[in-house]
View 1 (cartoon, rainbow, N blue to C red):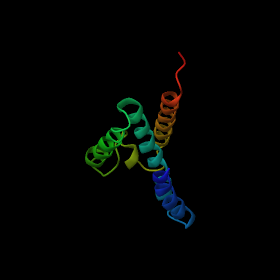
View 2: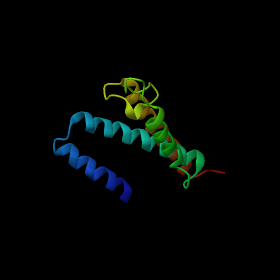
View 3: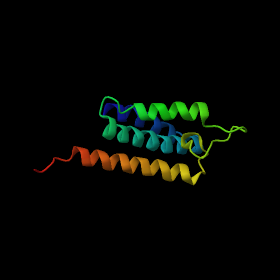
View 4: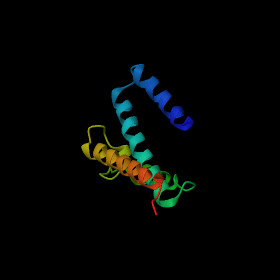
Length: 111
C-alpha cells in the first residue's frame, strides 16, 4: 500500500500541475505495463522473484528496444510513442491478466 502511494502521489501531482500530457500518458501506460508484468511474475515465480520479469524487460527495452532512427521497435511498448495503440492495448491486457492471476491465486481453494 505504501509503495503504491509512493508511486501514485508524485504521478498525480505532476498530472494535476500541468505536466506535459505525452509524459503523463506514457507514465500511465508504463505503470500499467510494469505493474501487470510484476503481477504476472508474482503468480508464476512467487512473491520474492516478482520483479525479475519487469526488470529484465526494462533492460531489454533500454538496450535493444530502439531501431536505427531511434524509433521504438514494435515489441518495446515502454519506449513507444503515446499514439501507438498496440502499446496501450498490450499494457492494459498485461495489467488485466496480472490482476486476474492475482485474484485467482489469492482466492481460497475449496476441497
